[in-house]
Amino acid sequence: MYANNIHWSPVEQKVAQSAFEIAYKREVKALIEEVQIQANQIKVIEDMRHLHDFLSARRHDIDGKYDYQYSVLIFVFARLVKEGWLQLSELDGLDSDKLGKVSALTRM
Image (cartoon, rainbow, N blue to C red; front, side, top):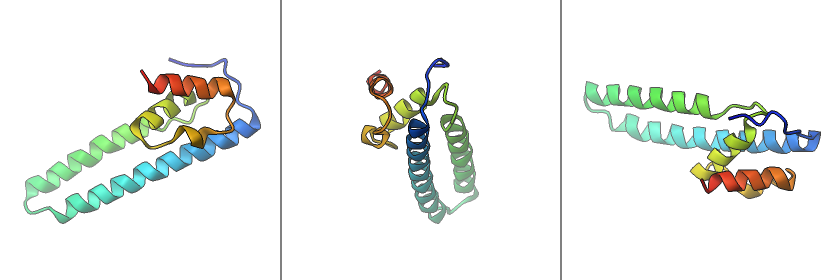
């Protein structure tokens, strides 16, 4: 689903970029912490394989989630809010229509 007809003002673009980076940094930090915990618990080769599989899955998820195309950014932000990586208040500066769409999508 795309929202090609949504216009992003220069101010909104800055707000969006900042929020995007905040969420990405939070998720990556949490991932690093989880990997460190799992790595410290490796006892056998199967544990290492499990960590490899975990990392591969998380990389796929993160690479697909963080798509900074304006046509999908409303949906990206809704997902990030829903997953807890971003707060709606961190999108202050976007127009009320965009905030309303993000908010509505988080309840779906």
